[in-house]
Image (tube, rainbow, N blue to C red):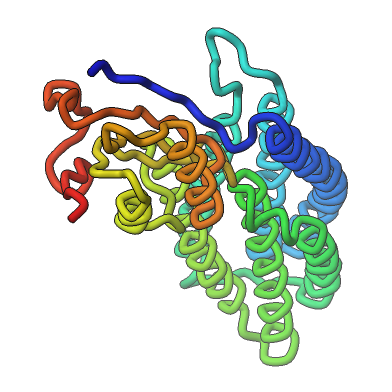
Length: 326
């Protein structure tokens, strides 16, 4: 019996409109909020740069430099959202969704590079920290903190479902931490005359930024390498398919992320000879969408006599999923 390949998508017809309407709504909301955050960040970046130069504070200058990368990161995020909303073409069959992931990766790497520059400058200042106008520094840093909190509130919620927005949100959180560090350092210099607090808190803030950036970089790279999404257990997906009536085996099972919040799955399913393929596909589609949130499925239906090892695209280990339903 020959193989019959059937492609099914949960967002077809009514679900199609709902899924893409939700995605477009999310993109539109993210674009509006990112635009507001970009304007606020750009304005206060100039204020912090002037304040850092006037007071001689490394922590304030570092925060201003961080805000400069925020402006670039936010502009990059907005550009990625704009490109991501463009329709698919014969040459780009998935559209431009992956630009959001590239933007997130670039933002994460930029944060690490900035932190390394701050480390270097803090080391140079440690043994002979210069005097800082700490009172003015605290006022400027407090204003920066308020702006950061407003921006973080605007992006809160979207950052949980959009890796691109999360990169921008992490930049804002890094800025907020920088402002808090600058305020504490200003207080220590004002009341105790301890000017080493300026480079010290710069290093502490940079370490926190590196830690958060590493998670962003790791998630972005995992998506670009077509890795299984962290929230999906591939063994559980295999088990759910095998426990469906009429399924005898499954192989070449792959789950990957197209862009934030949109996963895809492909698999070869071996079924009983007399089973109704449309009914089985409908059941598998509903189960995988309900349990794992996967809305883009490509399932090749096969019978046991058709299976051919030469056509398997998998490697050793769990990726092959050769277990057979008992």
